[in-house]
Length: 175
Image (cartoon, rainbow, N blue to C red; front, side, top):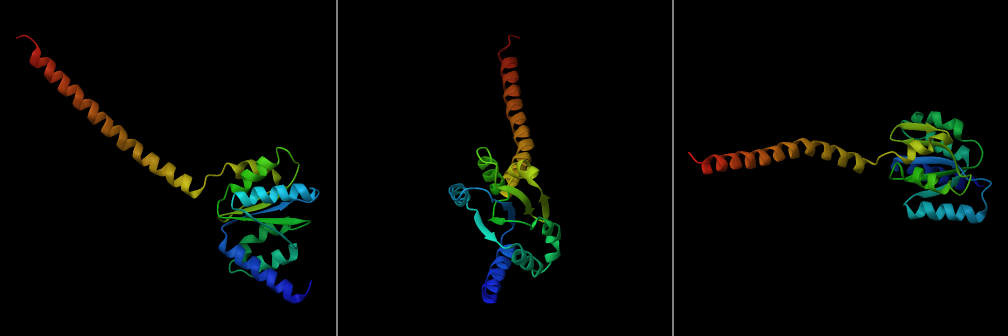
């Protein structure tokens, strides 16, 4: 590979690492071409961009980003064949990996970078697949905030009906 190509790839990766909040490092080696294509299609369908990269170029790209030292724990995972899954939804690659692994023994999860948190190892797939997205978490917070208000309103409404019913009963009662 020529130096110009390497520089171009490093710049591409720097841009991806800077502008994509979540990425997963995987090893899809030993999968047939057909299976790799199936996995790529599954990723594409979920809005995940899969790039096979040279580990040294990925490491150089990470190190050259401002605050690139936050990626240091990932460097040990940059060994052997590596495919990076870039995504805007933290749990999407985890779900795709979990689903794909029902019928295949790979790709193996090497590491994942999720909002300043780093997950190392294939045993993290379940945890990553069940992560809630930002939208899900906001929805949960709104639901929690609405719940007490609904209880108060419900209580007031039922109490109002009870008082009205009580007054009507007292009114109709023979003296």
